[in-house]
Amino acid sequence: MIDIKDKNALITGSSRGIGQQIAKGLAERGCNIIVHGRTKENCLKTLELLKSYNVKLYSVYGELSNEEHVNHLIKKVQNLDINVDILYNNAAIMTPYKADFWAHSWEDWLESMKVNVFAVYSLSSAFIPAMIENGYGRVINLISGIKDQPELLPYSVSKWAVIKLTKDLAIKLENTGVRINSLDPGWLSTDLGGEHADHPVEVVLPGALAPVFIENNGPNGESFSGTDQN
Image (cartoon, rainbow, N blue to C red):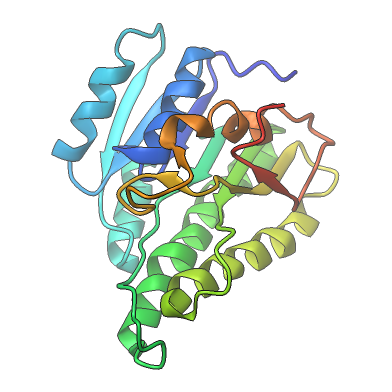
């Protein structure tokens, strides 16, 4: 198993929910954590949660729905002057459920794509080249197993786009020490998943960490399950 002690991980949307659990799981294994939330205040709870671990903690904040804001966020991370060894593109939005599934507006589609796909691409393009140069990197893009619900089409389609993005980028990472894979966390009780989900959010561990511990020649462009505990 790959040793991640003293590696640095950036987890978008780690102020709560799945991202917060991933941050906790990585910190327990000695990984330094860059917490991200929409605002500085949103990051405080996760920072408090992690302070008992013997790791370095950082926080950055910013919206992912605007290209200028994403670029500013990237600059904040770069100004930390540390390598980003592990990137979890976890943050996502779900536009409102539309019983009239023909009523999704172009704005619904665009907002979903900006946060769930465009930001993933921008963050990947910002940090993967340095990973390649350093000979090590793990990028994990969160997807969704949601299906047969046209009432949530902008969200579900954006998550399928992330699968395609992951697979197509993977081909460029062959013969490098960088692996990019997707993670379906399952239907979990979070602000996005709702209270009627199949599992509590804590179930995402340790399965969500599996894509980090693969070898440098391991799975690439594949999909992992957060509820797989093996």
